[in-house]
Length: 87
Image 1 (cartoon, rainbow, N blue to C red):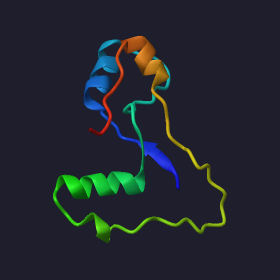
Image 2: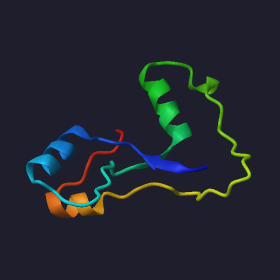
Image 3: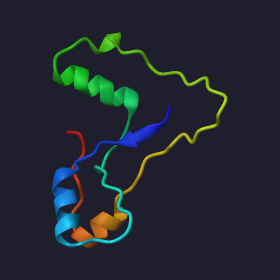
C-alpha cells in the first residue's frame, strides 16, 4: 500500500506568494494517510457505507515505493506552522 498526505493548500500558497518564496515547496498536512483510509474517512464523513470501498491491490510490474508521502519541512521552517491533519 502506498501513502500520501492530505493537502491544505490555500493559506500556504498565499503565504508563499506574499513572501515571494523561491524554490520547491511541498505543501502537505501533518498526517500520512493511505488512499484507502482516505476514501473510508470520506465515506464515513458523508455517512456512506465504507464497506463498499475495496482495499487496493497493486499488481503492476513496475516497482513502487511503499511510502511516497511528501514532507513540508521547508514550509514549516519558513512559515513557522505545521499544517493540519484530516481530523
